[in-house]
Image (tube, rainbow, N blue to C red; front, side, top):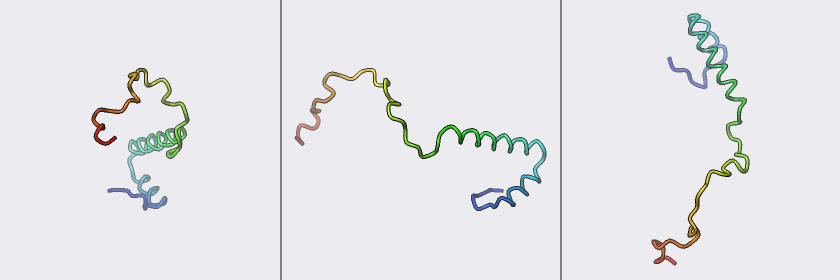
Length: 74
């Protein structure tokens, strides 16, 4: 059986009540994991400034120079 977002709370609850005890504990652990993961960071939050600082450890001296491949276009 495939559950979709359109499934109502009451229908979901009745389906969970029909599960064997061991599967109920699996559902509970999944729901707890989802609940704790949701507390770490909002889904559509912007990255704080400076999170990439220190990751670029080398950049060549001619990084800003024009590339030879584009001389025809300049």
